Image (cartoon, rainbow, N blue to C red; front, side, top):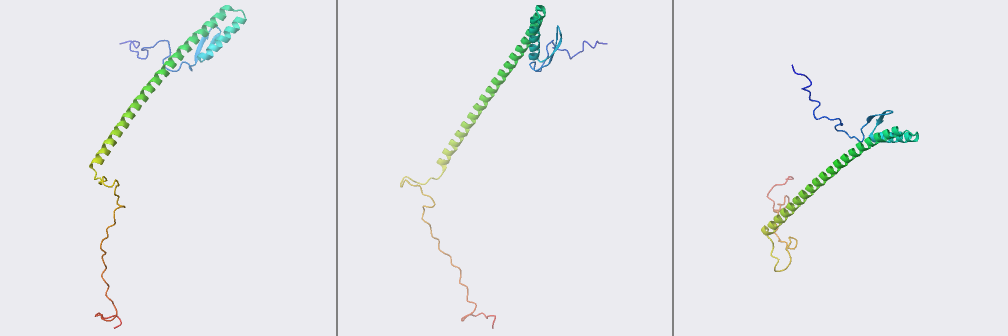
Length: 174
């Protein structure tokens, strides 16, 4: 039977550094000479700097140097994390600028195509439409300016007189 250690899949590509997450806001447990110091890198730096000053005031050069080295370690960690964050931010900004430039280019091409389409369709419309001859008068004739044509009026047939002389039909009174 095979050993379970050789089949382990969870430890691939692992090193001692934490993967993922924001180191700047991550909480660390630092095992210093005076016990554990817990907090974000900036809080740990501040604590070790305070311990460094206290050790200097008590004339303990070894402890002061030890605290200074611990503070320097977290300062370097924090500086590296800040560089990585800044690099990621710059890459994101560059990607955003590239995307915006691409959108602007596509928008201008689309507008240019629309203008060309409208210009070519309006030229076709002008060439195909029946235009009045304006060379003579310089004015364009509109339907309002044309004289109204009179249609012959159709007359209604005259109603026959229902009562009266000369009527062949009997009236209701008869």
